[in-house]
Structure formats: structure tokens, C-alpha cells
Image (tube, rainbow, N blue to C red; front, side, top):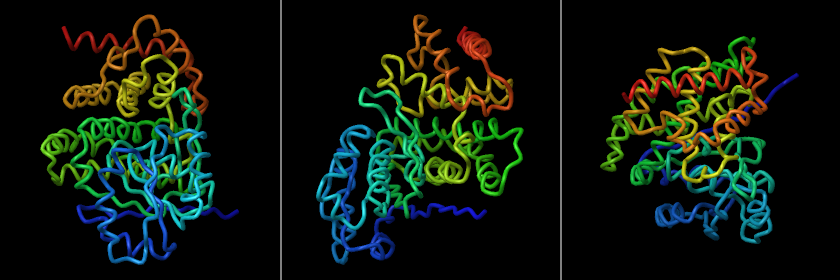
Length: 359
């Protein structure tokens, strides 16, 4: 039986938007832009300027609704300016981009992405993370294919608040460890094997370039380190997401995130921050202690979570948090049985290690 894989393509650099006309014009003459409020402000002038002399026209700039939910997607689908446009431009961070991607998928329209922050790989994946109306995790929605092309304007990303790049590093740190963990005992077909091979250097690149990249971003400098980290977050991890089955994409670090969304106060933390704690938890549970300590030291240097209190899970919610992690639907794909007792022991071991580092 044949299989078809659509791989993402991208343009990256301070002049990335100058390529819009030559790449997008083949798909129509009108584009509607969907994104976050701040993202639309940041990208609007650059997008408009890039298309000044083009036959491709932007017919509207539309706020995505504030969260990636079916309610907001349905609202966009019914919007005449969205329905009538030849293509959709998805502008912003993960939730805005995922909303626009899912909208385009449901309308069978080509979608192009314009990330304005480097907080995740949403710009190049077919996966959309959708939430319930109350903000809790809803579902993984898989589009038919990734965006046709991503335009990564490094100048706009360098001007974004530092917390987004930091969270992007935290999220991308998980890819190498989660994919390697869940695929450990499996015989992989070509696409999965290719994805796993790409994943094997994701974390190492971030550990090498992450700190200098953040220092460059503090002064809005587009250094080589900064570019390495931005493209690792968006492209390397995105390629893995496209190529591997989702049982390899999501493992215990993201089980921690999904569990945390179901407890009060999750809105205080970005996705990647919680996942960064989840990486420490995964490495502790898997007894990769040397690697865990390396990531712990890195997290400490760059300001990512180290313990439960850093993701505001207090003693009163610890047991529920543990139980929710144990309910993750991808646990059966782990290379060995994981039960509540093992999760609890691993959380306690990480807390104990953290206490030893601060005294």
C-alpha cells in the first residue's frame, strides 16, 4: 500500500516576506490574514508592503478569537471574507496559527504561515492543538497536510518578548527525548525512522545554542545562535512532527502538560514552560540521570521550570496531577509499563534532586 507525505517548506530571514509573491501567487489572487491581535499589528505593515506591486491582494485581517477552539474555527468558517478568499495566511503563535490552519483545512483552502514568535513548531506541522471553551486541553486535530510554506521573518521574531523564545526552547527540548522514548522498542518504517533520526539532534542543538540565543534576543540581535535556535524550534521539531506517528510525537513530557491544563492556574504558564518540566520528569522516570542533570542545569541557566512549584502545582494538587498524568492516552506506547506509583516516585525523585541543588 502506498503512502503520501507532504513535507513543509520555508523561507527564513529578515527579508522572508519578499518571497510571498513568487511562492503564493500560484494558489490564487486573494488572501485573508488570520492571527492574534499583537501578531497582526506586528506583521500587517510588512505583509502589505511586500505585496504593494503584486497581483496577490490581502482582503482582510481577522483576529482568530483568542483561543484555538472549535467555536472560533466555526465562526471563521462562516465569515464571508474567509470563505471567499483563495488562501489563508496564518499569522502569530501556536494557538492563532493552529486556529487558522484548522479553518483552512475544513474549507479545503491552501494555508501559508507567518510565525511572529518562536514558541513552537505550529507553523510547519499538520497537527493543531485544540482546546475546550474553558481553556482545558481538547484534542489533537490533524489536517490533511502541513502549511504549503512558512515565511519566518527573523526580525519580527527577534523583536518579540523573550518569554516566547524561552518557552519555544522548553517545548522543543522534548522532541528528541519523547520520540526516542516511545519508539525505543519499535521497528520503524521509513517515515518514522527519518523523523526519529531528525529528532536525535533537536535537544543537543538547543542545549548548545539556547543560552547565547536568548542573550542575543534580549538585545533583539539576529545572531547565528539565535537563528539556529529559532529554526530548531520551528523547523527541526516540525519535521519530526510531520514525519512520525503521533504516538512518537507525544509522550510523558506532554502528558505533564495536558495534566497541568486540567488544574487551576494553568494560564500563568506557557505551553513550553510546562513541557520543559515534563522533560525533567521523563528523564528522571527513564533513569537517564546524567542527561536529566544536564537539562536541569540548562533550565536553571535560561529560567525554565525545575520543580513542581515552578509550574504552580502545590501539595494540595500533587496527587490529582499524578493521576491525570497516568491517564494520558499515549502511555501504552511507552517502552515499559508506567503506573501511578512509578509516576509518583519519579516526581518525588525530581523534587528531591531539586531540593539538594538549592541547599
